Image 1 (cartoon, helix red, strand yellow):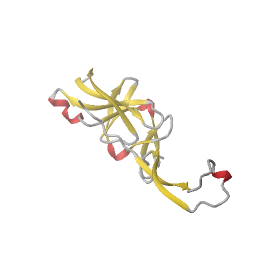
Image 2: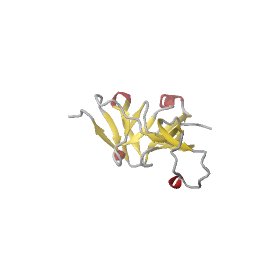
Image 3: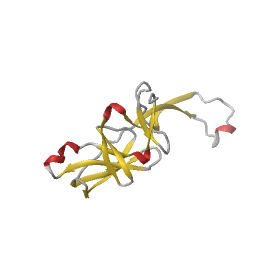
Image 4: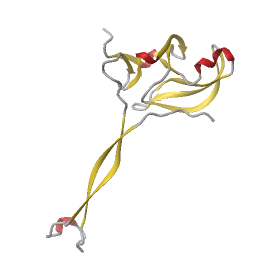
Length: 156
């Protein structure tokens, strides 16, 4: 079985819980103030990763979530199912489906579809395993189709 790393960042926010020794069923009807406030840290929300704004980045065209830093681009000469695609060394804010064997233009590969963690749009795939030795360099790399990307930060 092949697995794909997911990138998640969590923000812990304090959640105030009041506990009283009052026999009252509703805190609104209680006349005495609650003597004890307990603060509990909870995992509140998954946030997307943000790439540094000083670098050229690629973002999801549908929701503008950051996907990759330009420095992680390996090649612009790939073909996706919907046209041209780029090969990246690493990506962020991307989830991964199960790996499956597919015959692509360059031979048999085990690949897993990747999707934007924010809007759930399928973006491309991750190369999990290449069966031909000449294609081994793709293992662990990511294809994102141009139809799903937009350039952000400093491309002018």
